[in-house]
Image (cartoon, rainbow, N blue to C red):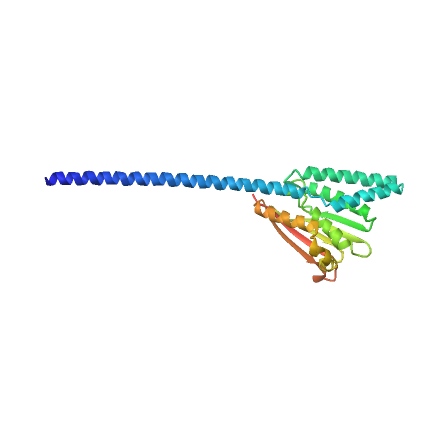
Length: 264
């Protein structure tokens, strides 16, 4: 009788062990499937977010200041009315080339620095015509920086240069200059410095206070949105600073620095 009881206990224990093992296996399987579904959902949401950022980046790159287009077309019309055929044709050729560059580069996430420089030169050439030689510019490139093999976010710098002209040099009496420098820092990063000798950001903000209270600068808005989206995309690390030059020396104007590091 005792042996039967012992056997029954062993059988019950074995059954309990099998049931417990089955429960553990079922729980582990369910938990793994649940985690897999959660992971798939997170990856799906991440991909959707990346696509959204890409769409937003493309939209921002397509934003060309309507005031610039309007002013350029008015300037072309002015030279035509003055029968200045040579200047009007030159202006129209540069403007058409700039529009093609904008459309071409807006399809790209990154472009070569050499391509960015080409766009900047065309943009500044048009602005120089519009300001009737009041505007001058220089673009200097570090010989150690390979502009034909180094990328930069597409059309990143044009809004900054636009700000330098419209809010710095526009308010200055006499001629003004915009300087753009590309400096290699190391194998994975480079520095861009954009300087103007205008009235400076502090004075410009005071002069435009009433307007800027109600409507932020197009160029500033585009730049800030680009920096936010690029940071969230985890593709670029960009350190950005803007300084009124009068705070550092007796010079006037504004200095903007951008340190680019592409993340791999």
